[in-house]
Image (cartoon, rainbow, N blue to C red):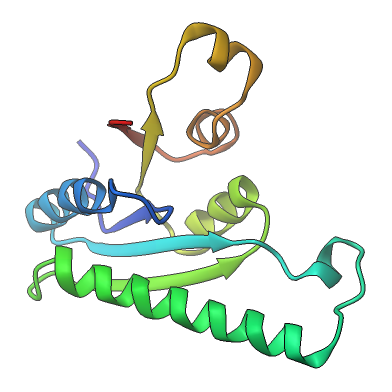
Length: 148
């Protein structure tokens, strides 16, 4: 098996964060790897063709992003042992492409994501982020089932 030196965990703010980081911590301990905890926030409106709006809206969004980054850092401290190197990153953009770009930039050897259990019909009509990452990504993917 290939050595894992960089493990990227893509998280959304849900109840499965502890499970995802638990898997990452276990693998990182075995391979002496670094864990990158990444959350992709919505892009700024000016990135998607809208005007940025009044300054108070921009200030509110900046405050919101700082708070999300503090949460990510807190998750690293709470769920990952201090002996394992970890870093939290908050990035704005399109979820799937941003995760793929970041994984390539960080030379990630493994991508860990959560996946929701849905019916066949739901999966047929809706693409999931984890399935899109599997289709478009070029690194191994560990998809952890998330209980609803």
